[in-house]
Amino acid sequence: MSAGDSHIMPTYNRAALRFVRGAGAWLETDTGEKYLDFGSGVAVNTLGHAHPKLNAALKAQSEKLWHVSNLYQIPEQEKLADALCDASFADLVFFSNSGAEAAEGMIKAMRKYHAANGAPEKVTLIGFHGAFHGRTLAALAAAGNPAYLEGFGPAPQGFVHCPELTLDAVEKLIDETTAGLLIEPVQGEGGVRDVGTAFLRGLRALCDKHDILLGFDEVQCGIGRTGKLFAHEWAEVTPDVMAIAKGIGGGFPLGAVMTTKAVGSVMQPGTHGSTYGGNPLACAVGAAVMDEVNDPAFLNQVQDMAIYFRQHLARLLEENSDMFEDVRGRGLMVGMKCKIANSDMVAALRDENVLSIGAGDNVLRILPPLNVTQDEINTAVTAIEQACAKLRAGE
Image (cartoon, rainbow, N blue to C red; front, side, top):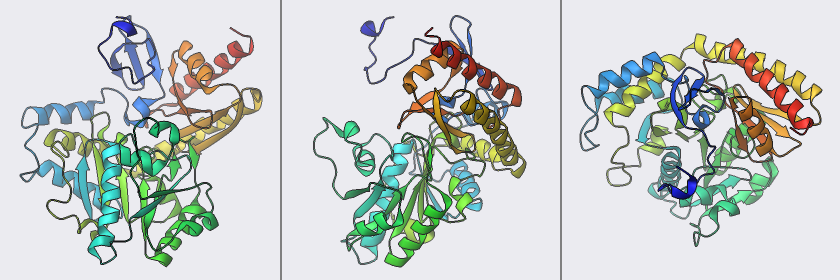
């Protein structure tokens, strides 16, 4: 079916590929062509495709119970919340279905905290240039990208945006209405930018100084993507509230708002909700992801593969300086800033049967599954070399 004949709303520029099955880091089309998936469904397929432990968890739970709603206690939800809190700063968890919903929940919790503590005027949230928090109106307003807001009428109020990643610039924006700061420790859509350990530590100090909250968006950089369970662990700082999604479901829609007790306890019955959020099926899969990823040996392997990959990318950068400017990101969240259009590089890699993703700042985003092998990395590196050669030759 051509794009003009489809009944699907035309909100995406889709490649002409139809995948029908997958295994590990590989996908197969309806015509039998195999592709190395180094996009991982935009950092979602944490353990690749058709992982046996996730399949087993999904099958076992599907034969018992799918959905009951949050009108009742859900043991699978309690199990996953326990695992997340035991492994993090958090005391309380609210489950959603997506990253945008998790971001919305984080925004609401940060504002509600101040209202419940006698400071209802503290509603403004400070975000950062290059941020992305999802496609709902409040999430778009929090990120402040005009292109994403165009045509949707007045943006929700109460958001300001810091144009640079400096503490002086942030502090100048803090006033009596400020509720907190929202930041991705490693920006994804904005160009795979690691904001840096010193900056995150400085933000924590600013929040403590001004009695405001620190909110991290780890929807893309969390759940082992950087070689730690959560990216902020590299800086040895903790937020007051955090949004996660993508990798926690391993391919099944799942998100969460994680908070300290002080923040989460203000979200009493009636303040927030979700019909599907945290249903037994989603949480059973999420628990299986946590069982696999939240293991020191697994995370060490992620770090080892990241080092191996980056060593090869450093050589590629040197040998293809006409194509790439730098390599950025952290762990297996990799960005290569392009000197040609990143869309051309994505297409050239796709011609080599390797899937990647574009990002802001003209960056090629590479997000392999976290259980990627050296052989698969070698395949991707060879494909990048071949793509560069063909682009250079005008093929």
